[in-house]
Image (cartoon, rainbow, N blue to C red):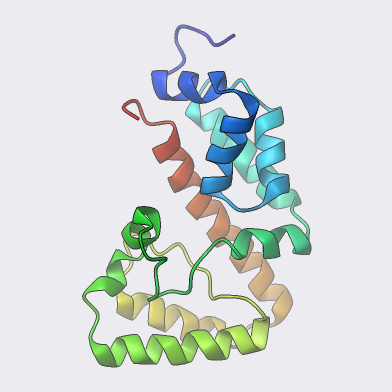
Length: 170
């Protein structure tokens, strides 16, 4: 049972039937283990409690769990058609020049060839140029360094998506 002081959006999430809550969490992050851990922590008294649980779950994900989470993200510059979340998060590439889009495609392919997964960055609020510069910088990382950067970036993305999930007016 949720407290009357729990924000209504969070109370709504806390009260969701398990399958519906799991589906909502899966939309925020494609990792089954991450979602399972957050589901097990319900009810949450505050959004900060939810975010802290998300951060803790993200820190514990295995390489396979991270790969599952990354599989839910389209390449930068190619948001999933018809997916408003993908389009909103990659808004910085929407007005990019054809040259920048072509450069990002080339960099995405090189990154994916090296690391075996899409280049993942919390794109919210970033320009196309900032994302291009980030992939250029990160492509020189070791797989171990990059895995931890990806873990951090996924955590940022998950917090943004969880905030939207528990907003007052859903």
